Amino acid sequence: MELREVVFTLSEAFGASGSESSAAMTACVMLRNWCPDARIESGNVIGTFGEKREGLPSLVLDAHIDQVGFIVTSITDEGFIKFDQLGGIDRRLVPAQPVIIHGKRDVPGVICSVPPHLSNGADVVKYEDTAIDTGLTRGELAETVSPGDPVTFDVKCRQLLGERITGAALDDRCGVASILYALELIKDRKPRYNVTVIFSGQEEVSERGAKIGAFQLDPDIAIAVDVSFAMAPGENDKKCGKLGKGPMIGISPSLSREITDGLIETAKLKEIPYQLEVMNGLTSTNADRYSVNRCGCKACTVSVPLRNMHTPVEVIDLEDVRLTAQLLADYITEGE
Image 1 (cartoon, rainbow, N blue to C red):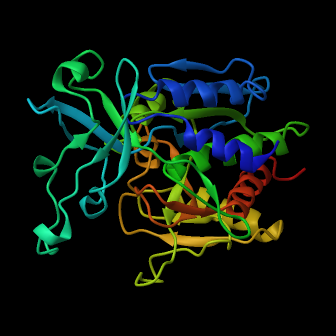
Image 2: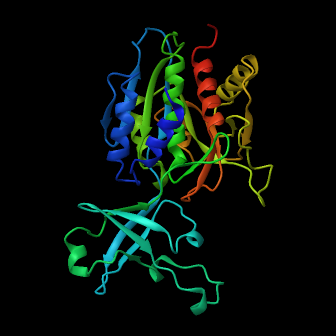
Image 3: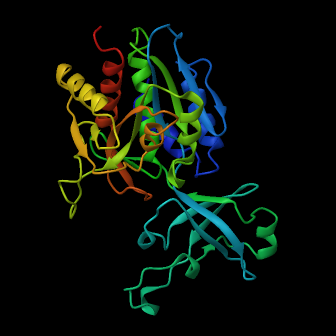
């Protein structure tokens, strides 16, 4: 398994929240290498690892397949596309971005930007005050683009120095990749759990896919593999992890301390570098959905450090993805 290639392929697959089918199918095809029954149900990719064994607790590995983006709201008489956000996007970075409108066919465009000569440069643009320019007329657009069509940043993954890469949907396609790599690591080992994998939809709009998946699968344990904030200039080092220093294990009153401690113990036993992510309430990840499902579930988070979250230039270190996979694999097969 070439991890870099997998991350690049997943990151570049289109899958804005609510329109994840292309990215979901890409991930589903990959997942079938380890979970032959992998399929797409209600927008989620679900697959079973190995044969179910009686008496073992059930464990779900979850990573979300959707990405932040925009949604078309209307087309002006002049042929400009009005839009709004899908998920939390910093409005400061919106002007002048290249985008793709995913209509009946993909249409490239750019988000309009007021030249600095005509602006005082102090205002943050509002969505209602900007638009996408495609070069097409209203009539031409009407044949291809409709209100409700999703829009994503038009960007490809790029290699930086060392193991660093940048791209637009590494949140959370790198989490998907880490789960796939973990399955590769345990393919010849016996897990101490009955393992199910879910790549859930619509996480960026209130974890809707995980809510459906949690109710459907009703696991005993769930590990949400997501991303969290990596240290960058001007950030608070008490609230951020560091790139290249390993996965961030979640600690929170909404998470299971039993699972957190088990993950920490595994990391120490196997000498896997790790970091702690301490939260004082909900985690804003899919773990929140699993922890209150039906009669409850022992949920925890394992996160890949990521810079520039929800931007076209998210940055991760592939070593963190590998270490996350190793932690998951060793935790699932602990004792062998």
